[in-house]
Length: 538
Ligand code: GLN
Image 1 (spheres, rainbow, N blue to C red):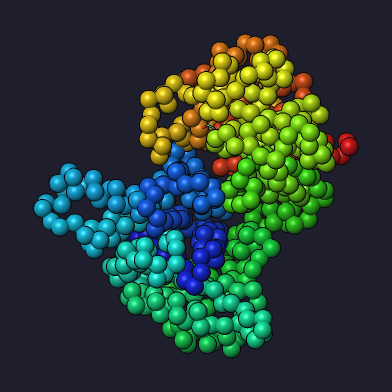
Image 2 (cartoon, protein in one colour):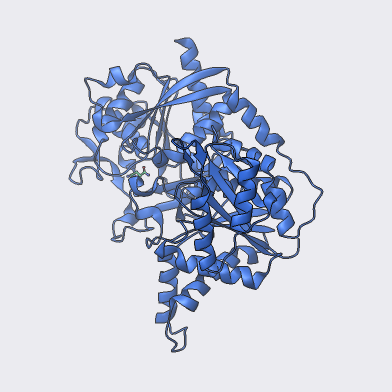
């Protein structure tokens, strides 16, 4: 294809309708037909990136190879497409304004008054087209965060209107995702909210080309005709998106509804190619027909909001399918674990994962969970803060350094087995200043990770300020906790293991960011396998 085509996905009526999943599913279908596709998310909030947001606000912060702290939808894009995203795939209002203001300070606007239209909208348009201009993609799908009619999404909607006009019908289209609610008292699905939301979009000069209707019940033919007529779209462009038992069913559901064919038709792309979803459907088959079950405890302090651990949960789904078992994740709030109740909370589990996190709250509970897993030969995976807790636990309970701690929790600790990284000491700004993105790690061959990765050097993604303190390395190793993964340039310890334990691994990096349907993360696959073996034995 010679020119890049642009698809915009907007949302109406309500938030949380699953725009990200619809965008990812359409992308999957187009990719399965042989097109090169990427997805971008534009977020209308003023934070420069979600890195400074509490997980309770916005769910997990997803990290890309190039070290961008991004919206969790980018995780879905990578998991569905198995294609890497980068900073360019996630743009916020804060970033747009920051860039425009910097240009203004440099005098780039030549004395003009800097305004939302055209300066902010131009910046948005540039960010959208920047992905297309790389020549790497046939199709760029841009998801606009928020709901039409929101004050803060107005500049984005205006930018979409302009782009749609400039690029023309064959090169750009708008998919509008809405809700068709079911009123149980009336026993009816209602189209009025959708009509209003399409009208709101029209007031901004945008006519939706395709309607995707989120619903709990099947849309009848009559209802589809009505939606088409009142919302000004072709009948074939009314697509139903019914609640699915798993997000991984959505590409097939969209295929059945013809979302990909109507999209291609509207973009003037003639094709005889059918989507090849072989690998995807193999995964689905294994995911839906498990031969066994494992129960894994997820120890964290954001367990009330599942989105906080999105990538970990999805990694378990991929790894479960690979092992042909279902992974039952039991959330355990670290704040409420103590010496007395830890056994009661953890004894029925087949494995324990101690989650990433920041700050002091819930720390002692995490240490107790590590101790329980270590002493009871329960497979253990510690991620980032979870790995740091494993080092603290070992120092306290095996080395006997009772006051061992991280300087994050106690800056005055006499035994900082986890310490602020040297280059972090001069940093005062919180946003975008952690050790982020992909870093190399040399792998010890004779170790769990050596066998799992089967490579001597790996690259994994990071997001942390504190690190294993190498001053304690000799002591820790002599006592049985071995550093099996080390950064070749800085000697930073990336992985610890306890060879005497059946399966005990702590990783400073985040393997969960790199697990995809097509390529489940080997560490999660091995961890679930270890959990399964533990379950069979007991
Ligand atoms: N708070 C720890 C640090 O900054 C761990 C971070 C994390 O778990 N992502 O090093």
